[in-house]
Image 1 (cartoon, one colour):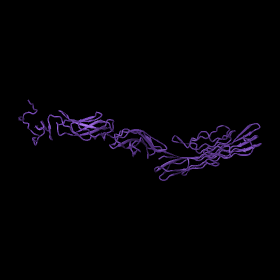
Image 2 (cartoon, helix red, strand yellow):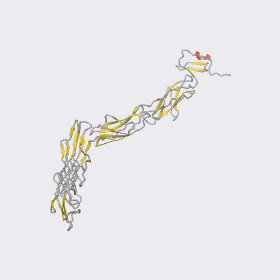
Image 3 (cartoon, helix red, strand yellow):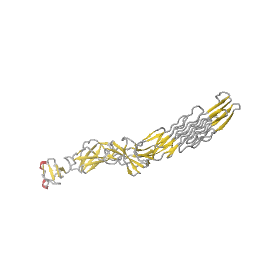
Image 4 (cartoon, helix red, strand yellow):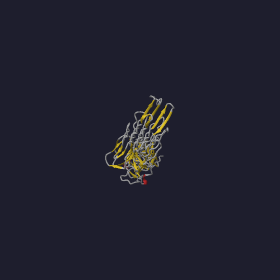
Length: 485
């Protein structure tokens, strides 16, 4: 006995071959299809089997669906469009799967989204259709697609500057690029931490630092960094530390010109003149020549130390064009130091120390120290008598002018500006440098103190006399030029 799935035709359900389907069916109409041996129902667009699993659908190449989304490690998405089969039962759900990783998604509509993917990873996808009676076969694998997002937000580092430039170095740490190459990294300053200023672009998309230029002296800034790929631009990083753009320092050890990077430019200059050279020492002998200061007696009249260069400052000055000429005074032998000049302001050089003189063994005069920002030390008079091996020390006055050097002394170590006439060194010491922070022993000068830092150490010093026929040159002058705005 044969059992049919179809009720008798007398029940009112039409039947026949496929060609006998009603010409103008309504949604929900039934038809016994003897050609296909199934009961069909009209879905509104087609006749579909009432009691069969769906036919195998087709899928298009997946679409990268998270291109505008912020990066996370699982922010990737793919969107898969299905086309229903022309055979099989009505579809209640479409399913999509990745071939690796176990990711999937489903929808009652014809578009399915697979979420939770790793940005920058390529995925291959297939799909199925499903209803109450079963699941279709798998579709062929679609072409592989890489899931992408916006770039990962950069991690800010530090902002640093110095008083030698108005530039600020900003650092950061790069993150994931969101699955697509970066096209740029942008750095934006925020005035007082709130108002965005004109941005600049890093040198390359792999850069982790940028030197930001063109900022205004005296203003405070924080900085934020962001990255861009083909999908778009990520959010700004958090703000960096705040930095205040300091006055810019320019140092001149020799003559030259200063050309501002922008106008108007306001500056102040601090000047030191060159040091004067020392005076020459002289000897006298009795009882014949001897290399060890004479067999009978020897006298030495020490030369005075050269004075240091003077110190001067300009007023705050603003220029709208052009440059500033800087002349740095030069030290020379057997002469006063050269004058240092900026604009109409001069810092004179220190004067030369006086030569020691010898008339005879008992009538001689040591040289006085030269005048200057601090005077050179006076020379000492020294005499040795070989008969009794006695040393006779006579000290002479220190230099005049400025902070005058002290009298000559037979101490082993003399302070700056103090003579050092003694048995080993009867000559006057050179004056220490001028400036606003002169301090220390002979040969040590701290320099110009600006904003907690010393500049121009040991510039403009006078030379201490030496026991020879040619005095050494004084030390060159110096200029510290500070751009304040």
